[in-house]
Every structure is written in structure tokens, then in C-alpha cells.
Amino acid sequence: MKYTPIDPALFIENRKRFAASLKPNSIALFVSNDIMPTNADGSMGFVQNSDLFYLTGVDQEETFLVIYPDAKTNSHKEVLFVRETNETIAIWEGAKLNMTEATKVSGIKTVMWSSNFESFLKSVIFQAENIYLNSNEHSRRHIDTETAEMRFNKGIMSKFPLHKYERSALIMHKLRAIKSKHEVDLIQQACNITEKGFRRLLGFVKPGVMEYEIEAELVHEFVRNRSRGFAYGPIIASGFNACVLHYVDNNKECQAGDVILLDVAAEYGNYASDLTRCVPVSGKFTPRQKQVYNAVLRVMKAATAMLTVGNTIPEYHKAVGKLMEKELVGLGLITEDDIKNQNPEWPAYKKYFMHGTSHFLGLDVHDVGDFNRKLEAGMVFTCEPGIYIREENLGIRLENDILVTENGPVDLMKNIPLEADEIEALMAK
Image (cartoon, rainbow, N blue to C red):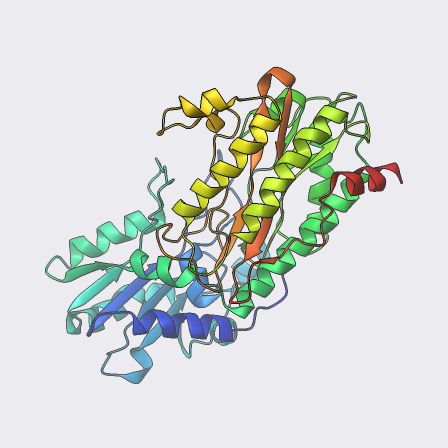
């Protein structure tokens, strides 16, 4: 990893809260992600299982975690298993964590080699009544490949069929939705790196630049600031491409007079940021482009103000829809009659603003959490309204990351240029 060491107090407190949520006499098991193959002897870069990282801070493969609060032996209440390192691994891959280092990272005192996991598990699991297994439970999840976690869970349930099984995901979704100060600091660092990347672009963008050249500028700035890179696949969409919500080709030439939609952000320490900005290729928005831009900006500011303790995301999205209706009427894109005669299941504004305004943000860009849960202090959401006018080759989306607090929303990206005039002024330099 490139990031500086994270205070293990974060992971100690996370485990404490998780253990307190288990039923009596329960054992919980977690496993790291695989290193996924490409072809021949190639492999993709390793990305840790978010829940395992949340509980341990360990950022390497072949890692297991056992949490058993009611274990009869104190040293068995939480046990971490890491891949045994050796001289060959150190030469070819770089040394893995030794036991002392694993304790330093995680705060877990009992550390064993991964090769001892199965024998240890058999020595304690029959004392437990319930087994908590973890899984990637997300409403937008679509996975065709069997993950290490899926394979691990099948093996456990096959070997120990008479235990009662519980889902760790229900607990993880509840806990991970509320960010601690340590987590907010990590997200803020990701936002700060994103700011550096965006400011770098304002002096670089001009007619004739390729979308992938912009991507390269961002990669350079992110990595040189200790980020692994993009927190998600970057969207660098000029002209009509901005009307394709998940455009990722990034292979077109940026034309004079067009606007580029940049949905690009850095990760830091496995925590994501999520930014969207729109910039004029020629350095100045046309009057119509600025009109649409400012309409989206007004919705964004009003929506941000509604991310408050006690609100709910479904009610919030309804309110944002009303704001967008008014702006679209003002832009001449829909009429009052369109609204009057609309299908309630697909309101008129959805023709030009077809996605939600906010999602949870944290270890994952689309982080886990219950959208029907009332907003609480410590939650972090994106705020990202947009207007997409295909017939005008214009897509405008603006997005910042917002921390919910008892004193109102706090914009973690408040220092990143947002006003159209400011962006034009910085590009002019």
C-alpha cells in the first residue's frame, strides 16, 4: 500500500462494536478477497474485502479473522491469520506482514499463520452455537464470478452443517453507515487528493485534448499523493458522451465549445471520495451551458442543505425531484402540463434527471447502508444532481461528498472549485 499507517484504534473500536452486536455464544468468520487472475500468469491488483479491512486494517491476501467474544480462552476471543512470509516471497513479491507487524496494524494480539486456520477453527467452533458468515449484500450487486467469500462460506456450511447460521452483513451495514472521526479523516484525505487532481486539470484542458490524456493527468496526481488511483472507473465524458451516465471509454477528442463531465475521484487508505465537475473545453461556458450548469448547482446546494439528522433518503429524493421539476420548467425542457399528466412512477423530470441524488460513501463508493434508516450524525453521502439534454449534446452533473452532523451538513469538498465563474477564471490563468 502507498498510504501512511492508519491508527489501529480505528479497527479495535470497529471490532468492539461488531462483537457487541453478536448473539450470545457466537463465532464470526471473515476472509480476504482473492487476487483475481487475468491471462497466462497475470493477475489484477489486489483489493481487500471491505468488511475485513474495516475490522483489521490488513491489506493483503490469504487473511482470516475469527471473532468469538464468548470463547473460553481469552486469547481466542479475536484471532487474526495472515499468510506466512519467507525469504522467497520477500524476493519475488515483497515480504508480507509478520506476526508482530500484523498486531501493530490491527491491534489484535493473537496472530497465527493462515496455514493454521482450519485446525484452530476445529478446536473452537464446536463450542459455539451460532456461526456468523459474511457476504456482499448490496442492492446493486451483480457478481458472476465466485468470490473467495462465497467459496469460503460454502466450505464452512458443508463442514459444520448443524450450527445455526447468521448474517454478518446486517451488522456491518449498520456499523459502517456511521463513520468515526478516523474514517472521516481518511475520506477527507481522499477528497483533498481529488482536489489536487481537479485543480491540475484546469490549466490542462483545451480544444484537441483527448479524454484519456485528462485521465492520465489525474492518475499522475493521485498516485504521487499516496493514492492507489481512482476510487472507481473514471468518467471523462465530453460533448454528447456526458449524456451516457456510465461512459468509461474516455477515448474521444475534446472539441471546442463542448463541456466535459468529469466524474473522477481518488481513494486513500481504501476509503473512497466521489466528485463530479463540468468544465468548458474552450475555457468559457456558452450562455445556455451556464444556464443549465447554474440550474444543477441550485439543486445541489438545496439538496445538500436537506442532508440532515432525521431525514430519510426516500423523502429526500422526493424533495429533490420537486426542485428539479422547477428548474427543468425554467429551462424550457418540460412544461407544467407534462408535470400535471406525468406517470407518478416515472415523473416528467426523469427524462432529464434519471438517477438518484445521493448514496452512502465510505470504504466503497456505493457504500453499504439502509436507505430507509433515518439519517444520523456520522453518515457520509454524495450529493449529485444532474441534467442530461441529449438533443443539445450537453450533460451537467455536479457532486460533492457530505458529512451529516448534529449541526448540519458538512461539505468535505468545499475547497474544490464549483461555481461556473470560478472555474472559468481558473482556466483563464
